[in-house]
Length: 265
Ligand code: URA
Image (cartoon, rainbow, N blue to C red; front, side, top):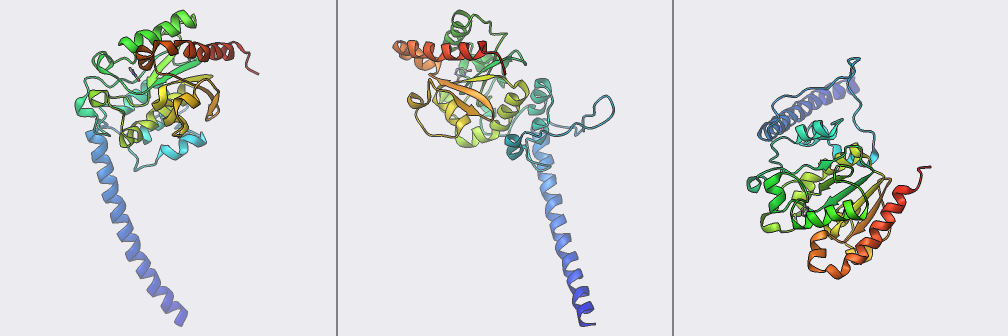
């Protein structure tokens, strides 16, 4: 009898707590939906395949950490099944403080099935104006590396940045800006699934590998990023200031060419 009374009392306390939790969840959901609306996402839909089945969310273990759930600002983007869907899910992004200064969000360009992906830091002035990564002076140098050095076209590779909006005065992106954009880059990499990533400069490689090691120590040797080979090298903008180091970049790019020529086992 005692036990039953105790149980009954506990159940009513549980109900109070459940109600409190539910109220908190509803408030949290409301805030999340308002954020999505501000980010330009006005409809929530569950995409279905031809058989009417909803696709599985990503199984990649490294994405699970950033995938978030119902309350994440990135959930829809992380479930995108194509680059077009990913771009649409990013929308008129206002997830960090860079959006008021941008002309264009610079998503990325190139072959969605590229074997090699170049990742820079963030758009500069020319990229912001044109909406395409690496189109300014540093971009011309990168294009030379791709075309003259590797014998490929820009349309054969994929080019993207860690952050998709231009930081003011070309300053380094700040940690909260990287955090807001990182799930998009990770999904972009997962969708492209390149054989090789060339990380351009200290910022890209340090972000991807979560290290503070200097680019001088990281460059020129293979690293691994979630099962993908990554070759860090100097940023083309650095090469404009230090043309003497172009030979080092060429050494790094030769390793990339060799890797791409190696048959996949
Ligand atoms: N520098 C970068 O890191 N990215 C660009 O798109 C242009 C310059």
